Length: 149
Image 1 (cartoon, helix red, strand yellow):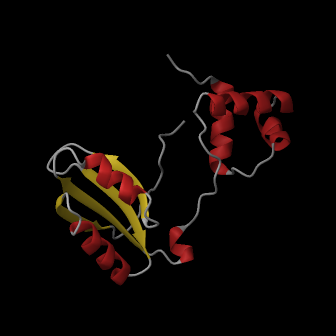
Image 2 (cartoon, rainbow, N blue to C red):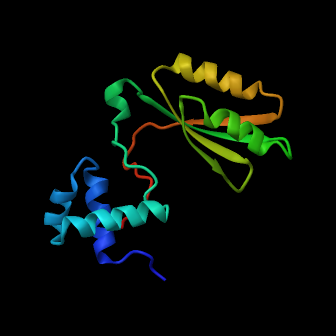
């Protein structure tokens, strides 16, 4: 069952393109009333479909030129503890439970290799971290965190 109808999808596409757009402008683009836009966005927030409306920031333009994917193997029973600690770190953008050889993957962004080096050493030195594997992103071809709506 699809929880989003065509109007919801159109509203979401507009917000994903420009989250600062006001309800009146969205209503004109969707060809509906401002009240409908308000009610739809309110409902999608209540249903946790929209969790935040935030700007998309170009990390490179604010000095974060290094993107690293860090896979971490964690001693059994301590995964959530390590994840919770590092999820709060300013350079950690995403934390994922993963299948395979590692238990979790962090998506991180840094200004310098020195910052990355310090972070990896801090992470590897944690009590329950068994090993890490760091991959540097050479080029971002596409970066999006939701599928096409």
